Image (cartoon, rainbow, N blue to C red):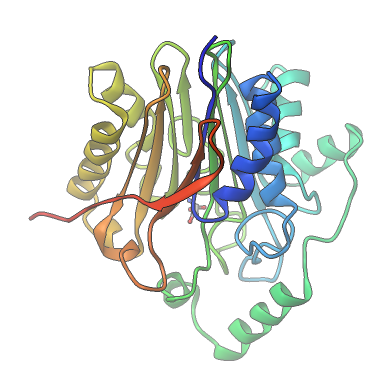
Length: 303
Ligand code: ASP
C-alpha cells in the first residue's frame, strides 16, 4: 500500500486537492482522482482562468484547453480550443478512452463531446462578461493585456499518486485572456503542460504557455527526476533551463509542480512575474493529513 498524494497548482488547487483526495482516500485510481480534481475547478465559476467562468479570447469566445494522462497505461487524451463544454478534462479523458487519438481541436472537439453526451452550456458568467467589456473599453491590444497585473490566466494542473502506486496528471485552462482566437498554449500538450512516467514521477506546468511549450517543461522535469534529482531540484532545474533559453519568460512568469513515484513533492516558479504581492506562486497538496497550500520556491533569472 502506498501513501496517496495529490498536488495541484495555485490557491484554487485546494479545490482540486479536496475533490481528488476524497477519491484517493477511498482507494480510487489516480486517474479518477485527477479528473475529479480538475473538474471541480472547471465547474467553479469564481475561477476565471479555468472552465466555466473562464475569460474569453479577443473576440469574446471562451476557448478551453485540457489534457489528462494515465501513468499505468501511459495513455493520454486532450482537447484544445473547445467551446460550450464546461468540463473539458472529461472530454479529454473520453478522447483517451474512446478514440485511438491523442487530441481533438475546435469545433470537432465540441462535436465529439456532444456525440459523447456532454451538454452544450454557456461558459460565460456575469463577472467574465463584465471583464471582457472592460477589456473592450480599455482598447488594449492583446499584447498589452498579456502583461496585465490582474490574474488573466492560470491553469489548474493536478498530479496524483494512488494507493496502488500509479501516477496520473490532468491540466485544464481557458488559457490567456483576450488571446488570439485559435491560440493554444502548453496545457493540453503532453510533455509541455503535463507529463507522467509511472516509473519516475509526474509534472504539470502553469504560466506563459507560449514559452513553456518551447522547452517541453513537464517532460524535462520528469527526465531530471529520472536522472536522480528529487522533485524540488528537478522543478528548479526546469525553470532555470526555461529562463536560460527564453529569458523574457521571467516577466510573465512560469511555474511547475512535480510528484515522484514515492510521493515526494516539488515546485518552482520564475521569481520575476510571480513573486508579487498580487500574484504569489502558491501550490496545494494533500497526503492524507488534509489540504494545505504554500508558497513555492522562486528561481531568479541569472544572466
Ligand atoms: N499555461 C496557460 C496557457 O498559457 C496559462 C496559465 O497557466 O497561466 O494557456
